[in-house]
Length: 170
Image (tube, rainbow, N blue to C red; front, side):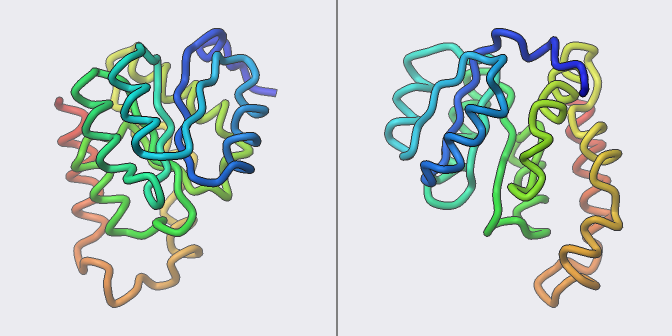
């Protein structure tokens, strides 16, 4: 079992319109002080009224990008967690709009390790996307997305790497 010490006692906002996902994440992050929201409005109010160490935002159903903008303004590290919106376009958008990571829901069983890695990178002043790149290699995406769909930018991997590099320099 991985060391999740950086997560101990952290206050984390989890936003998803699926109650079962909120419950699973709360269990997986039992070492944290978890606050849950199932709507954009509830999450927006919580982000504006409370301090959080991190936010986990679903993209679809709760306007995750709108919430990401609020989290960024408040300096709250944000992780995009999605199933249906797990696409090359959303990955690039997440990077460009300031998310600290992007995780497919099918990988959420490893979320504590993943979040701990993101917090460790931030604490050390490193790019929080670094651990993500190592844990979800190119082959994962090729398997998941096939040979890339017609909707995928031709220079997707170049955009991805440029976005990561740009993100690192912020």
